[in-house]
Image 1 (cartoon, rainbow over the protein chains, first blue to last red):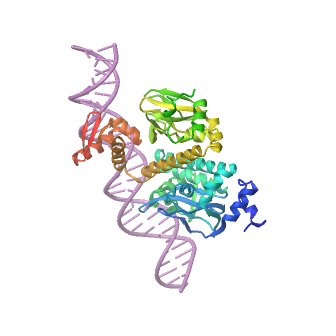
Image 2 (spheres, rainbow over the protein chains, first blue to last red; image 1 turned 30 degrees about the vertical axis):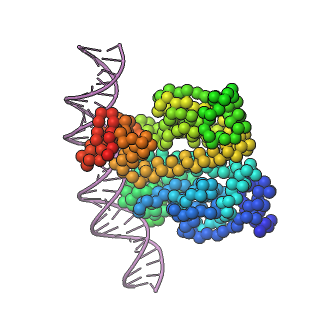
Image 3 (spheres, rainbow over the protein chains, first blue to last red; image 1 turned 135 degrees about the horizontal axis):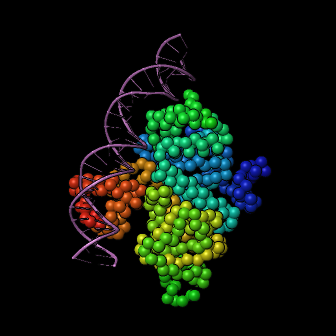
Length: 209
Length: 209
DNA sequence: ACAAAACGGTAACAAAAGTTACATAAGCGA
DNA sequence: TCGCTTATGTAACTTTTGTTACCGTTTTGT
């Protein structure tokens, strides 16, 4: 239902009142808990989610190895859902909430309709495709060209920037998951960084300097 | 100029006569030679190319290492051009003709206009985004999860399928470039495949069984 | 025909990353 | 508090991949 208190919650991209009304009519807000799986490989997606608050971690998985693709944050939607929306494909990635998050979902069938009706929605779609593509390309380059040592430092610096804090709260094991490598490898490299004075290690966190 | 002999040359995606007319009015056909570089990293793109015949190889490069992203073939356009068309970005990939090819180019400024005017063009754009994304994701997975041995075999099998021939004409050095590795590594693995009876090696070509 | 370039084989070694194993310490729940 | 789980440290070893060097053969350009 369209109420004045819900309206402000949709990202400002959707500035056209008419589009906002349609979104609120056809979609709904959902609360997801930390650790909830929103998208699984092979899953058929009939809804399209926009993140209102919180964060969704999107990654690839194969056997027991996983590797980070990107995060979906406030006002963004995810690529797999989008493309599934257009081609009735199933997802090939996983999406898990890293925090308790609020998302807004609506039927994929609306996405195409709106694209023709609302230039702002169309713009949003193209922008999403583009930025997700760029992020994936970045991840690709990093995996294809960089050593694990470099990827690890890049990850830490990105987190620090993103969270605006030099203290990064994560275990070595989880770092290994993010990079698609092994805990022992991560511990080894981190210890090296510490000895070079680049950071300080604590149980469960890393202090960058 | 719009002539009846040129009309059939545009891919059938653009079935709307009006769109075809516009394309032919604003764009032109270009002949490129084998080895010509169409797109360079950092290059500003003010045209959007559609491949009519031949093949464009799109890859990433960093220092002296390069690695294949995908090929642009008949009726397709490339992601970097597309996204550059929409956001005035420069390219971060390279595009080189693997054969003498014919491409159709038109100003990027038209792409946005047409998107609102012609559903078929819009469809083409979204489809391109989607399929390029999928291809990139495939390349990512392969680099992230597979050994070079597996990637090499996958590459050969793909080529065989694509060209509908079990004889693949390529040197070890060029195979190494495609996979972003070293010639000696490729020779070593290929020799192993040969000893396992999976293929037969010739100078400049590989015969799959 | 001749020299130069391209192609492939292979050895020997180096570096990067993954694996196994075991140890200590910190936190946590009953 | 006690026992279990999680987090980390580290050694020793293996596997994978990359590097350098050198060889002979084939192809190509002039």
